[in-house]
Image (cartoon, rainbow, N blue to C red; front, side, top):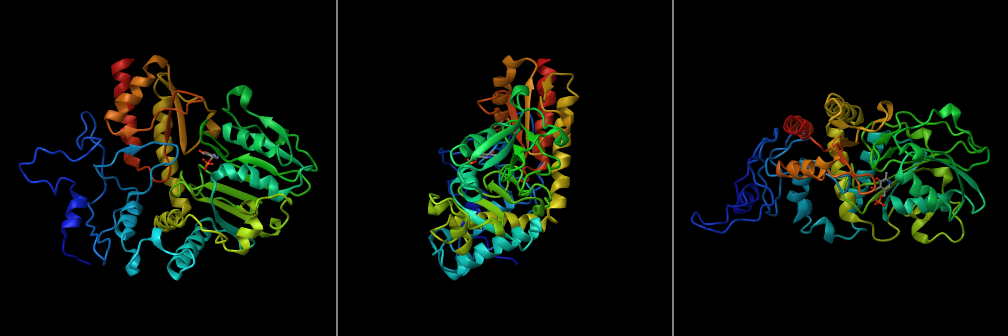
Length: 430
Ligand SMILES: Cc1ncc(COP(=O)(O)O)c(C=O)c1O
């Protein structure tokens, strides 16, 4: 539908629009629109958006579009969000679908928000094909809160639970579980600097453990499970932290007792934590469990026991909608595999100039850690990349080196631009 272009829409398309032609004032722009060495490949058509009451997106850009005024953000989280989702949220920010207010201002018990949270849940159910026997909860407190909530809800303080630790996040979950249960470390990748996942047959599991916990994708170390261990315990329960690969590929939810994920990597802004839990596991929380950590309370109240992170849930809903429009998680996985392959190939074919320490079979599709043979050049690499509008490439402070997080929303052009930069950097510094 064609709409007249308003001054607001011009301002959004062109931040200098409000300045007179002879103005010496420069609008704030941390990154120049033209890069010195590389021009990021852009597939986006410019959008026309108004801030008027009948806000509309007239032209939805292709999924994974990238506009020249944005950087390629390789942050591990909070992380890049799909450009078309941001544009849509922008267009609905001031007046959500004719309600006369923004999502941030509306009652979480009003009909508009109820339809937002219900649609978010049903789209997520469609994406992950979540069986009816599972509840979907939209919570707060980050995945870190789930490190405590899981044992509090699934066992008594005396119950053994098994942990297979393949990186720092699994280790943190293990340590937190010590306060509320009797966790046993059945395998740790720490001696090998978290670069591997063991063969499942060799694992000695605890027969009376209440569950087996894994972190499906270790964000810091870039280690990702490609298949999952079968819990050999009395309950047969597998629990997974999927914070950094949530909705990056299809997952057979029925293999898990609980899946949990902070939203801020693949599906939304920080502030929302998603828990998918088999319903029969709800209702046995330890007596001392704070009300905000009791899954029963949240399930009975459809995630509305208290004020939920409304705007964050709305954003997650837009991302779910976008993922469905892209053709669902099989299609998303194909794109993710292609991006990861391009980047890992560039590392592996650099004759050792770049190195990824992770064993090939378990390399993450989402977080790609790498180092430089000449480690003294790493700071320069990160600095030069930032000048080329590729930001947040510094590795986690605990491991150093570099890390490129290439979540769902990272366009192929971002990875291609990074690889071109890596080759150029190598040619200049080899
Ligand atoms: C795999 C994983 N688990 C847990 C967390 C902690 O999440 P939050 O900061 O939302 O508590 C993170 C954060 O980066 C993570 O990557």
